[in-house]
Image (tube, rainbow, N blue to C red; front, side, top):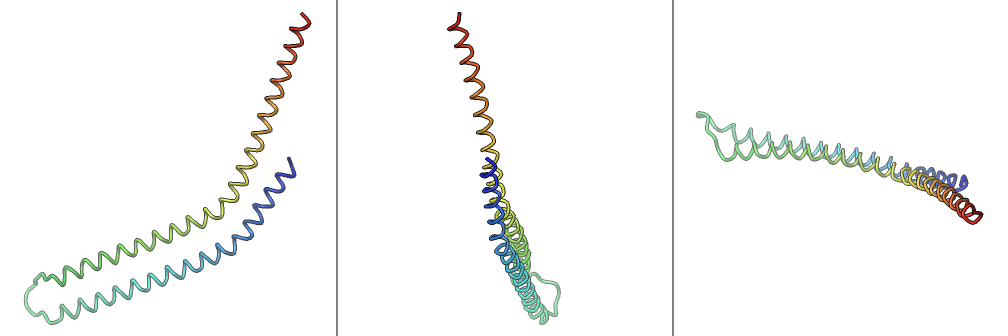
Length: 142
């Protein structure tokens, strides 16, 4: 019993040791990816602002609503949506890191708990068998 527990814990520790560097590298790469995506989003926003300024600069008359301005507002809205998506992707990556970290640990604990449950059920079964044997012996003696 204790040998099995030791083996399970050893496997969990070795798995954690093997996966930890990969998770660290993954988190670093993902962080750089998020920074790159933010930089690209900012560059896109700057380009949209420059285009909007070029379009608005020649206008000297009153305030008019043009399809170009509407498309500019739509692109700004899309940019904010993309930024939200990038943050959601980062949260998903963090969640997956934790899952990869805790899966072997939870599996090890599950195996240990199931093993303990089997020992408990075996003990209860033995007690029931002993009680039935005593009852059977008593019925034979009478």
